[in-house]
Length: 328
Image 1: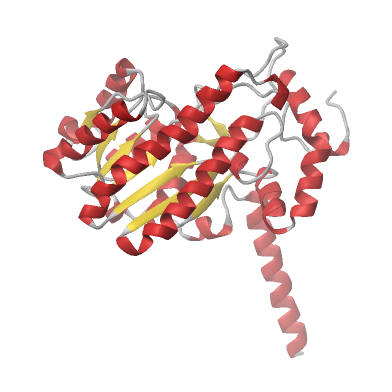
Image 2 (image 1 turned 90 degrees about the vertical axis):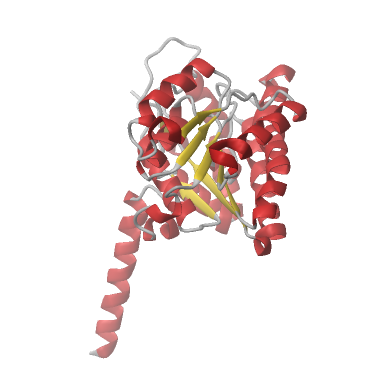
């Protein structure tokens, strides 16, 4: 009788976990944390790059409602002004709680150093508590051979060199204060192969390696790092990756609002890494992480089909790519 009860409990547990895995929009650890810890951001200074649109803009709005003081950066100052007006009404600090700091991450170390010096002097010299590396350069999906040198350089400058330079220059200020938290918006493409996005994927793998190493070096000195790896995200400014003129097939994507919320959950609970996505992207990430032979076999099987699907505005995450079925 006891064995039947034990087996029943095990089966029920497996069924529950399977359901959560199949319907969840994040990894198990992330979803287990529940809500954002408001006190983690209350009155803290948070600097966000790529804040003029998309996830960066949504992060700024959510942080304002949590009582944070916010520095927003991007290349487009006019868009930053628009974002400032919108978020200043959301937080307890009003207009005085939002500062604009235009920044082009590809502009070189001297320009980034100037931005860092300005950032740490804002809000009465309060320094920066959280640095959210959100800015990214991405181009429509294509094979690795079809990426021109200009696109290669732009991707690495914005996605890798920029965040690393900004971190190198900001980190000494955090060390002097004995605390600081880097939140890195990486990608599922930084954990698993991304056919059609070889250079973008390479840039995100580089980010993951750098920031996980940095955390290990400075964790005992009060420096925290949270690497966030989202899969497909629904944004109002998502690029048109089609070259065929056909109407896009709808892919199931996590909303920008939910992605931002889960990012703040991960950061406020001090998670070292968090994955945000629906299936089947999470499944591929788990396979590559824990069963690499199977995961890489899967990506090799669908790689060329995924590039073709993107060119035709198809669903690049469809199981039909694996099963070989064509959309009618």
